[in-house]
Image (cartoon, rainbow, N blue to C red):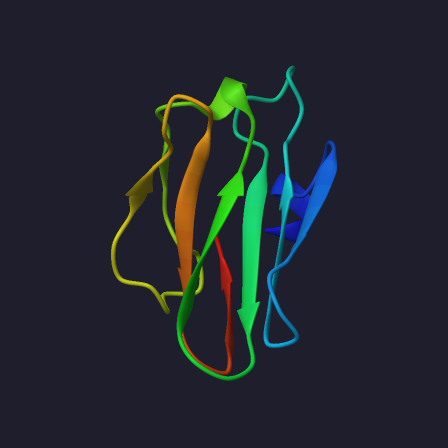
Length: 91
């Protein structure tokens, strides 16, 4: 995921000492790039993050298999990304 999708502008989200996340917007010329990562050290959580409007309406799937469902980004390219307790989730 890091090698193929983690490119473009990065935005960090520091929710608390137990929940952090970041997105990489991807590259305009590579439509399948961009990702979101959430890390939760204590409880399971969701973290609202924005991928950017070029990703608006896209479906995101968690790559490690820790979150069973896919999510759809809203018209701003934002969604609530989940992460199980004590884990990392890569979307």
